Image (cartoon, rainbow, N blue to C red; front, side):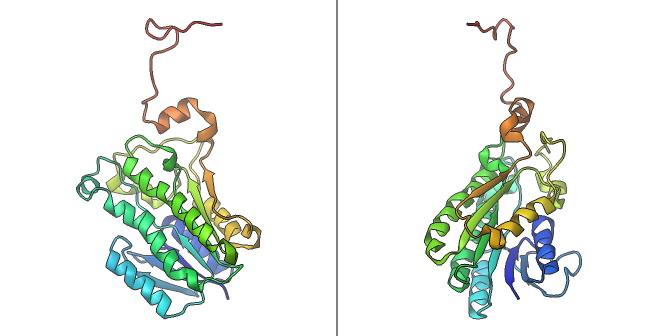
Length: 259
């Protein structure tokens, strides 16, 4: 039976990953500072850990190593979104964002890498479309963007063993995080596809990367942005919070010549 460690397993993308893997016959070790709303099912073990607590994270890493779990995969889906004007984020200089998104990913890969099986070991890190830039979310975007460098560095280190490390970067996803009061000042922007991304769509890509079909994909970031990066226009203006809205063509200050 294959086994995976899945962070952020109490809700959203992480919970969807855990449920999909369990349905496919995996054993899942879930990590979250909260418990899932209901038992995800047989084969699930929960580890109650706040990944922003370095001592607790280190204890988890040591416990996983000491137990010599036969883990085949790590899916790091834990995350929080905080705009730059969030009081707690300003007070801690974005430290909580960095610890949960970037340092936890590195620390868990570091702990699990020696135990991942050659040729079958898989690591998937869940990032965000915001890494391409979002007005008012610099600290969040920076903490998520770090996953690209972490993934490529570990992919280079582990490629001789046939272990893959990849990133999935989705745009706005329909998860409970959207209702978090701490992100109330961050607008939920429409995507060009006319809807939000569903967690199961992300899990489909996770499933591919964890399986045989993902064996030759490593060090890559898969962008799932609902068309934002190709549409420009209003989609890009929405992403930039209106910052790109300048003088209209043909106005006194915006008239342009033609050739």
